[in-house]
Amino acid sequence: MAYRYDPALDFLGELSSEELNELVYILTHDKDGEKRYTEMLTVSDAYKRYYPEHSMYWEDIAAELQLFGGNTFVNIIRLGKGVEYKEILCDVCDKMKVNYHKDSTIERIEENLLMKILKDALEHMSSEEVCNLGRELGIDNVSSLNAQTMTAIFQAVFKAGGFKSYQLTLIIVNAILKAITGRGLALATNATLTRTMSILTGPIGWAITAIWTAIDIAGAAYRVTIPAVIQVAYLRKLSENRKAIKLANNINF
Image 1 (tube, rainbow, N blue to C red):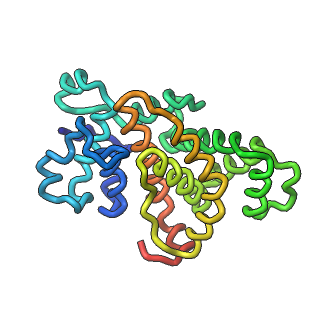
Image 2 (tube, rainbow, N blue to C red; image 1 turned 45 degrees about the horizontal axis):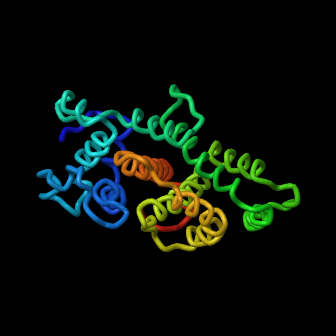
């Protein structure tokens, strides 16, 4: 196992072991909690030496993701190195029929992926559920709300960035991981996040979970790369907005 230098994954080296925990679990365990037959991370020397201090072997974690994203035979030719993260991200987007431009930034493509998940969920919600969501978000005139207008609102949130964008990412990723891996994110208990979760894990969270629970993800690699990419997108938002999160939640990171 060898890490292929990748600027898109270097930020993993700035995360704490606790923050890396879910990504490690996704890479090494399936939805039933069983070890993945194809994973190589848990047999690496660094894992055996440092686990559960994941931050001490973050390059091996990144390398494991890169290997899952590459063809096994081709990985051998690459001397045990997988593919760069952007190639994995684009492959996941193609699988999920996400509308994106390959020349866009990593952050933009990840947001397109998250918006596709959110858009699908909104389209599965009833008109009453969409209106109730609008009321809970503090929108005055909800009579004209529909899936399309709510999608536009959430797109504007992503475009604006900052803490609100992080909150929205958190909701989407938490619901997806519950459906795919059987466990959601381990979140710090604080008033702001608790309030956010109570609002958006209602109809939005239920819709996302219902859709993804019913999906049969074909291909062993996709069962790893799809939740792993979604988790990486969340971790990037967390890393980029750490100061804003600290101010909003009044907790120490």
